[in-house]
Image 1: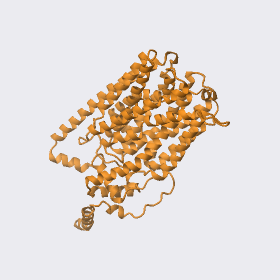
Image 2: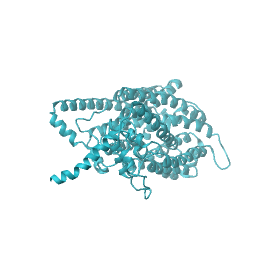
Image 3: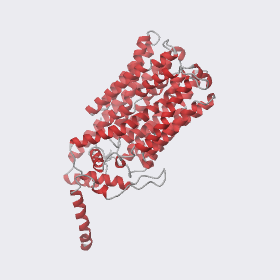
Image 4: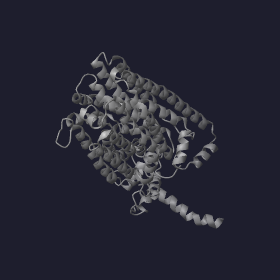
Length: 527
């Protein structure tokens, strides 16, 4: 026994020495040598490099200015790629709404009534919902750049195919394929950003990267210009799909080559900067790119978590409005008495104002480290907008158009707030990945039926607006209940820790391996 202890002594001494002298955070990374090439496209990431960065992050020493410099590099490299990919995502998803107000589009696909139109919208969510959670598991296995390359390429080709498709059946098939391509994209990007940013930095980044208001404004301007285009081969609505699909495929290639899978594999960061990037997150929530529970265990952990169901209900309720306004906005504006072309141009202003509200809400939420109250405010703003539409749409064009500003701003500001809140509430990382996908996939099952609430075009969709208002009020109530619950859990955990003896706390610390789970009394929920 003594000889065994003696033989391990040099190793322990060497380990202690390396950690003591590893203040620059490069020692363990330098021992690995050049990064080996992956054998095939779907081969998993090498965990050795992740482990080396994590070990360097434990002992790296850095200044606040160095941390800010690393965060700026991440902002300047990661965010532009995410922003551009999401803009094209929304183009390809919502350009059907701009095309619908064009007579030639409806004639080409045999859309003769509102029921056919809403079915074409709803069927998109079938594949989207079924593959959302498996897609997030695949992303963690092969890395973000390869997964998002597949995703963008698939839905870009589906969108491009609409240009040459004929008949209602062809449109339905392509809408299903587009939903399959987009499965895992939105929740996957939220999950991906959680590897780069601390919890109180996440809402603002999500609002900058992943809100439909910016692409909505750009898409409205493009539609306003492109629908006038006419050649002997293509008409205006075909140009709309063509011009917005091709950049998506180009963006997919850029994602593959320039988007790092995780911080530990980021070539734009030096070894020391990678250690700093990881260390700043370890002080907050210690995201792990490898290990932890598998997908099935993560799913069981999520479905047994009441918080996950509350988040799902909040998301599903407000998404009823989002899933309809993103498609129906040109139609609603045209219903106020404007021409099809002018209706597309008039979608720009609500989206621009909505973008400002989204960013302001997310910035203030991060600054105050509050999610619940901000979500409730956004729900009320959108609720008021829908009430105005339901009661005044036939009385005042000005009031109805103003209400659309409230609806767009309120609805879309909920995306970054709710998803950043959810990402803050699930731990470990493997549970967070399944959890965000669970919320989006189950909620979008509701979105299959969402367009069907706009069944009353002859009454200016007043009943649909009233249903959307009720859903926003439900989101408000559940957000209030969830915030109260998480505040109670934080108080209970604080009291439990205070009642523990020093020996019990030491035992708790000794059990910790990597991340603290969300059922650990040391875990603090953001409220």
